[in-house]
Amino acid sequence: MNAATNEYLKKKFSGYYKKAFFEVPSSLEQREWGFILFDSPDASRMKRHIAFSSREEVENYIKSMVPRHAYYSTAYYALPSAGNMQDKLWSGADLIFDLDADHIVRCAYDEMLVRVHEETQKMISMLTEELGFSRRDMHIVFSGGRGYHIHIRNLEVLNWSSAERREIVDYVCGTGLDPEIMLKGRKNSGKLTGWPGRYREALSEYLSGLKKLGPDDGSKKVASLKGVSSQSAQEFYGSVDALLKRLKKPEKNILVSRVLKTILAGEDSDFYKEIKKRAALTDEPVTTDVKRLIRMPGSLHGGSGFKVMSLSFKEFEDFDPLVDAVVFGDESVKIDLAFKLEMPLKGKKYSLEKGINKVPEALAVFLCARGIAEYAGGE
Image (cartoon, rainbow, N blue to C red; front, side, top):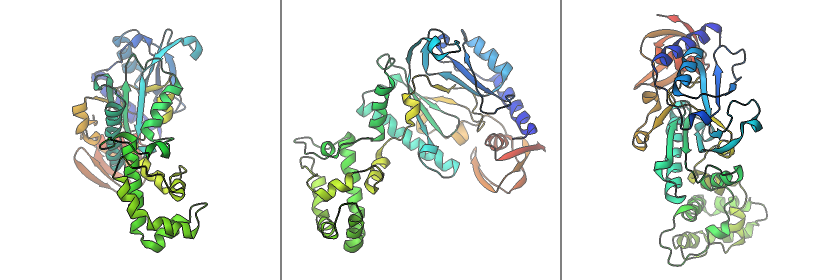
């Protein structure tokens, strides 16, 4: 990013912050704050170990410093401004789930946003329907970039250790599932829910795909697994129809074949890919880090220019970041684009060529903040 682009973005952010509503977290005085500034010689260097005692102090700081990124701690401290982490005196932390499209799928930005919305819906369902968390304790935030944060501010989880938080991550991500437990028969269980149900669905999907390959290719695929002979693979392929029928009956124990056990083993197998489709792929380090900094709702994301937004559950259902999180207008701006690009924004689709383009201010801020364009002046 050149100096002119950096100055353009800072000016735009400053104009926004002069009028913005600042959404400060609960227990404000116990939070550590961190900021990445436009004027920092190192674009990734954070100014942290900052504490505020009031909303007014937060507002004054942001309006005067105009940060490119603004964060506060998920943790609560007795002395949040202490320069040494041990001296801060940790007293608990919110439980945070970070669903970032970059960890889920690689595709066009607008497509990533659709996919991560689906993953977040999946996560909310698991947290409420399977793990017993109340929506009253859950707070949804669009990160301003490529995903969503789910904050849980519940006294019961406040003092959980990293290990306890990791157990939650393992559950929603489907990590360490035991095939013996997932596939054992359950008498009078009715329709299976949670991971036992999802596990059988994943296996059914895998076996159906195997069946579609036909006897030759299907058997070859099974025989390619370590320790499975061609004869065993052919015999297993011949049993697939019967297995698919048994999978539909929760009272039946399915794990009766050595070949099937081989198929289910390992986290780099084709079957495990089916498991991951049914998991909620949250970023594990964020949840397990009890001293994490998280983006401040109401601030702007320095890598997109979009607003970091708190959302009610109803707002989240139909939320479109490329419309709802855009805060800048339609004034024409010249940019120098690094490569040819198609980009939807605010209900319109833009087809841009490499080099100089005239675009609305909102799109100019996004492309410059993403580092794929430089500011080239007004109209």
